[in-house]
Image (cartoon, rainbow, N blue to C red; front, side, top):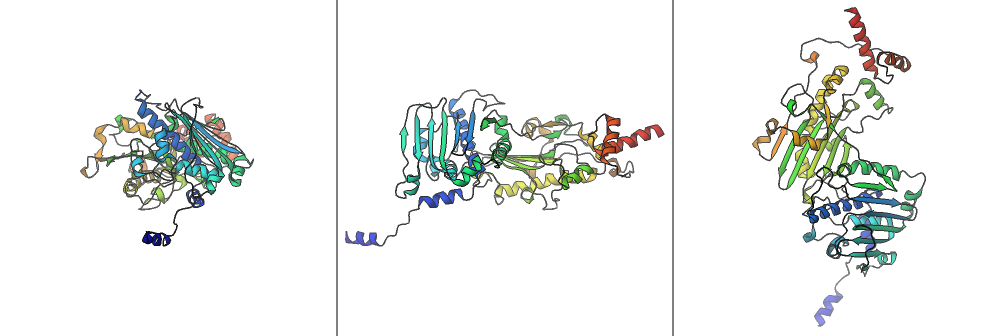
Length: 478
């Protein structure tokens, strides 16, 4: 007994403080990302509800019955959904713990949550007081967090009460109050850009979820999804040369599926567009670059940096002349730890082995389309005519229509394959016709007058107007 007392006297307290946890969890996450974390939980709830219901779902709109509503003001933030609620056993075992035990990972659904900190981090980011009400088919409960609990380092247990069913539909309601001053200012200031920025980010990061039928409201405004599409000339022309089709790559191994599509979503930029883009007078490159999707969530949107292969390994750095190039990379796995995402879930882990590997194919695709762009930049009008023969398609649907015979196995591996398009080449570079450029300048007002005369459309590109002027005179001269 004396020995035990002596040992006890030689022990030092090493238990954490709540203030440390709160600061550590919230320091590196932005407010918008914290809110998006809560939406991720809604999506996870949808997936679990669908899995457990065993009911037939609309293949095109499987999430059409589900919604989430976000509201914020100077005194509170709320998010409510009808995504099935938190089962009481999950609430007791890990949903409210600071981190998820290994034996409670969501390994049966396509989530992007790995560490089990999303909901707590989001709440702690915004305010000192909160309540979570969650309702399932079986039960309804409420958990509260108040300032006193946050200050008490000895008590880590949260007040938990089973209550009468209070929500109209099964789901979860989170309400955060006693907002921190900076959060209160962001939520209420007339100068705040949060609303527009948040709506825009949701439309980008949840575009695939929204297209599957999920509905999201922010302060009673319904969010509409952004749409990313690529040009192609159809499955029957994928075997042919001189056609506009994307570069494709597929990989499936070790419970990870990868799909990559890179191509054009519009015609090559004219010289005028490039100049205006560089001068900041036009924004036409918003859909250009790489978009990366992990389990249906967009974690990187239209990136044009070295992170996605631009400006390295003989790939040129992004330039407005590459406005037309867009790529989408999908990762899918039921084990979120295998996805190359950061802890904030809004970025790519550039050191991930699987990402570093697939990045080789991202660069391979970029070389194809940047080379094409450089070849055609002096033949913009002709190139536009070629592109007009192609139609737009959502990349994820494109993979379902690719003929099996056009795929090439990578190094004879059955789990890895790609498709190389054979893009058109200008006549001047195929040595059929020798061409020269004609270039001159006129005032914008004069160009609009001629455009209206020739096309009954004053907004035509100057390059089109100049080309039609030459063609008109050439026809008369011949």
